[in-house]
Image 1 (cartoon, rainbow over the protein chains, first blue to last red):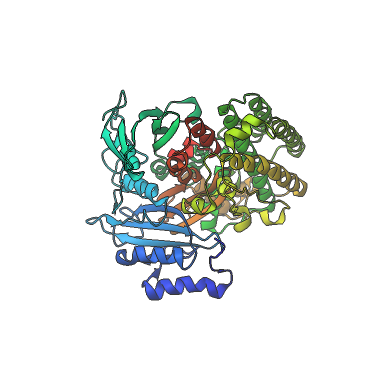
Image 2 (image 1 turned 90 degrees about the vertical axis):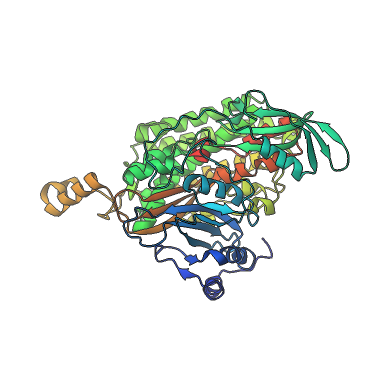
Amino acid sequence: MSDAPETTDVEDKRADQDALESRFQATPDIHDSWDASFIVTADVLRDALIALRDEFAYNVLIDITTIDYLSHAQHDGERFAVSYNLKSLSSGDRIRLKVWVSEEEAEIVSVHDVWKNANWLEREAWDQYGVSFIGHPNQKRLLNHIDFKGHPLRKDFPVRKRQELSVNDAMLDELEARLQGKGYAVLEQGSPAGVKA
Amino acid sequence: MKVQHSNGDTLDLMTVNMGPSHPATHGALRIFAALDGEDVTAAACEMGYLHRGFEKMVEQGTFNMVLPYTDRLNYCSSMMNNVGFCKAAEKMFGVTVPERCQLLRVIVSELSRIIDHLVCLAANLVDLGALTNYWYLFNPREEVYKIWEKLCGARLTNTFSRIGGLYRDAYPGFEGEVLNVLKSIETGVADVRALIDTNRIFIDRTRDVCPVSGEDATAWGWTGPCLRASGVDYDLRKAEPYYGYDTFEWDTVIGTTGDTYDRIMVRAYEIVESVSIVRQAVDRLRPGPVDSDDTRVSLPPKQLVYHDMEALINQFKLVYEGVRPPVGECYDGCEAANGELGFFIVSDGGTNPYKIKVRPPCLTQFAAFADMIEGYQVADVFATLGSINIIAGELDR
């Protein structure tokens, strides 16, 4: 925090946007006429996000979300976009990066190791929209039930569709992964009563 | 579960579910932990038990029909969610609400922050076994709810703001009742402080329990009181001032170590700051309009509707179709009781929102919870869970 560059005046404020445009071929997002928003390509996304965090002090990842443009009246292009909302605590500036994702590919590189909260935010974005995050260590549903079929926030998911879901997530896999992260090897797996192992 | 550490030690761990239906989770959260005696060796958390599809449902109605759904995000401070959504929508329209509306929004927001903090402190102290505090803190909260009832007819789910204004102006005598309730709040908080400030049990159970450094809190994307407890001086009311927050005299409250004690105390002191903001706002309150005169969002005056064709059409369009923000994508956040409550709105020019993504402050805090509690004891889990104030309504949406 304390050694983050000061970006309070207008000229410095442009430095991050210039870098985005020259180094990462970012283009301003015409959809956003209120704040600083840029579109980058998928291959430079990770580098651009890391550069924004380390060089321009956008140290907080506020949110990750996907947008499904399937029935958007004013859109012509790829079906999905993944949006990264960043904030700098030192300067107070915000910036958003958006990357187009096609319906066929429906995947984008994960940044779970760049910000700690990206792990869960990516899980939610995948759960709701079905755009995968490549390299995510535990891409499980976050809001919907583990046996839920489909991705409810896609525009072609019927709002009144119902599914019967009953079995709990045992979560032993997550617990074991955390134990292994602390240097423990599981010798004998106990199964908690009442849940599917 | 038998495990062996790389140094050769073997442990027989007991796996246990805390929640989802456990009184101390204050909602439905699940903490699945592997315990070595009383110590939490590893933990994994699960959420989503209260997921109601907020983001799907809001796409089915008009922009003003989103408001009742926002009540059900953080239901301990519904007023503030209403204000947060209206503020984001108004940013898209480029509408500035009149000064009286801004001050009333500040008053209801700060009172909401106070009651949200009161609930958090009361519940957290009950979890620690200190039941008396609950009555001291819930009594003033009840008085605030009586004001809400008079203001908008509802206690918990208020739907008080509208895009471009408020449901209605404050009732006669509102200012006096607000000033009275502030005194009760101060008394309640002072009584609780007298009970806990030098209380050995309280201090032993909270100090140095599950600390989070400022660096970690930032990396986890924390905002609000929990971030400030970790020593980061950041508050949206100061960093991106709105509704004249920069013109009031108040201080941000920051902690030092980011332990459970700091998280509780930051909230206790923030109540005092909010009381001061409300007093100043009430002092500035002058008669005037509460709705913007922008015809894109506000209904025209009734006199005009009866005598002017344009106004009549305007009224019909707003009632039958609803407001239409310009095409685009816009994010706006406000400082809610738990931190930054953000709304990312996508509009395709229609009367229904194309997409609304809520940025709930709770989520990033609960995401860090497993990391926070590992290495601490079972009793610390609930002392800490209370202190990060997870509200399942906004966590799960």
